[in-house]
Image (cartoon, rainbow, N blue to C red; front, side, top):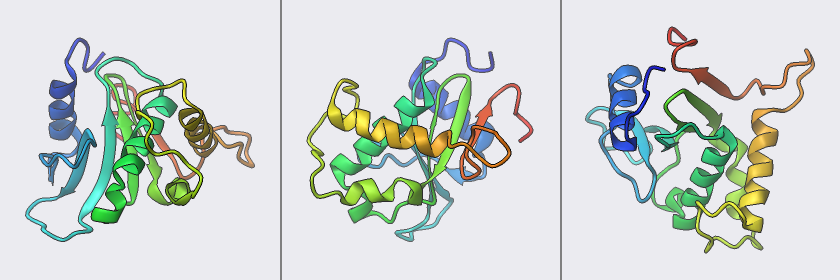
Length: 161
């Protein structure tokens, strides 16, 4: 395994270097684990990616759910223009979904944003998890399960991509 037995901070540094070397991955935005933007750009909307990172192998839907709840709780999108993609990664894989695919959930009037994003037994976590799962794994015309708008890569098997 490419990133076996590394801690979360080390994993973020290695992913930044190995896959986003031409970009700035040093900024910490609110409670978002990982952000990618162009070097030297000070524009509000210069981010390409906000992502959740986990050192241990973790379910993609759970990581993305936690990220959406983190962004929604802090209302980060009201302070900084959101990037085109949200993502997540652990020691074996990285996944991306378009921000616009989850945008609607941030504007629900009856949603409790006070929940802890990492608490998996809440109604809110289950609701967002269900949405994320449908975005990632919608049934397509050719019978495949992965949505055309999402990207999931195994660090070893899909390194070239």
